[in-house]
Length: 251
Image (tube, rainbow, N blue to C red):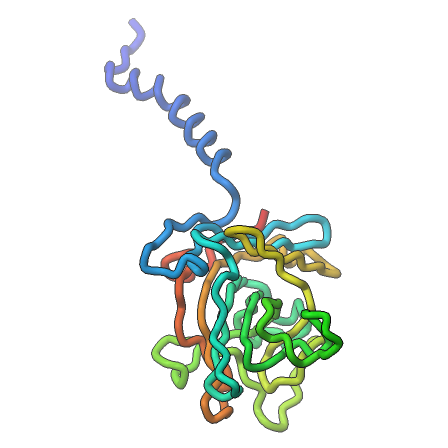
């Protein structure tokens, strides 16, 4: 006589394909990228709810969505560089900095969209179209930056990596001349409602396809004495993943 399965196991076996199909469907319905619950304690302009990097041919499309109007808040002008603030939307990545022209292995490569009314760090570009290259840092613009921990910025805090006096590291062609590992490539961000988007071309897109990423909104501050560390992350508004573990995969 054939062995009869217990009724409970028969029921489980019958349900398993249904559960599996439902799980696959749920995964298919979930948008790519990192979804994050809104938080009332975070200013809506920086309250990340979704972060994504998509690869389309030779373009990487960086997107971040917030609960309010993206780009609605910018730093207050102080009239001086020392101690001034930078507001930013940032995508930390697992890309090696060498991919965009920095020294290989020099830190955490991140793509950032920033605003800072007290200085201009895009000397090759006239973002406001007034014929002057050095007066439009308040307009949102993009950078590649290399980040690293530095206790001088605070416990567990990050900085944009400094270039020591006399050092000649490998730098991108659009490096703006500041003594830090920063690039000003000129890729213009687009703000529409709750979303900021930047399209970034690559000569070789393959490293981007394999990269992981996260999302951060943050304030940075220029050192009051203009000494190293020159630019510290001083206030993280929100991260897309709880521990900034870079769990996102490109799609």
